[in-house]
Image 1 (cartoon, rainbow, N blue to C red):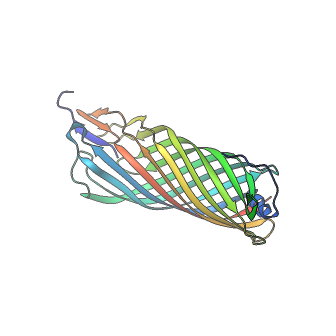
Image 2 (tube, rainbow, N blue to C red):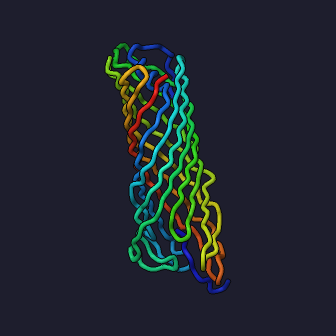
Image 3 (cartoon, rainbow, N blue to C red):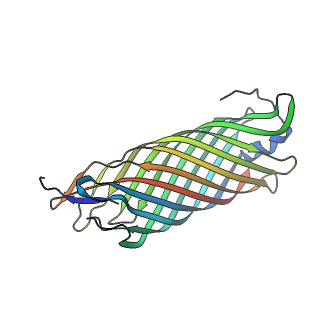
Length: 281
């Protein structure tokens, strides 16, 4: 949420070996599907005291936003991996903050509309691992990857604000399938950076909007998932992801009437729960 102030003066590589226990993993990685999702939003803006404004927590947005997702993934016989996804969520979050001209945190509590949109693509190379030294273990798939994506948040405060960024990240996907179980368990860790972060603040009575760059930040994501093959083609899946990133303070913009406005530093944490079905091909 913008702030206003009056100015006084203007990997290790393993050989590609095929293990029977990784057949279910490869089948799981060749499917298209849909999911119902719920995104828990935990957003906090912090002030740095610029122009004598407040420091510490300025406002927060918290709440669960429901949505849906589609996904596609493929893995070749040589374990080359590709995945893509798109999701959109729409709902409400609880706003806790203060007037844009300043005040005490918590003096205003209300409800904000929220719409979240994401898409991403991922490229990787899987390695089948079935032994450690001379000792055999339950085979698993280790897949280092690179990922690029885009995020958009339409936030219903003031007359509407839209936050966007792109990101680039590297990560690793671990997958294991207990023998003859049709179940594939996955763990994922990803670290990257945002780029091209931006905010658009809409105009309204008494407020001239603005559009400008935000500071970029480190981004990370951790996830757990399970995929079960009810048949050769029909799969069910469930998962949970945790993602965190930040936005740096914008430039200061004149918004009319001798006022200036800016977007403060912020941190966003998302916890995303997923439940869906897929078609394996």
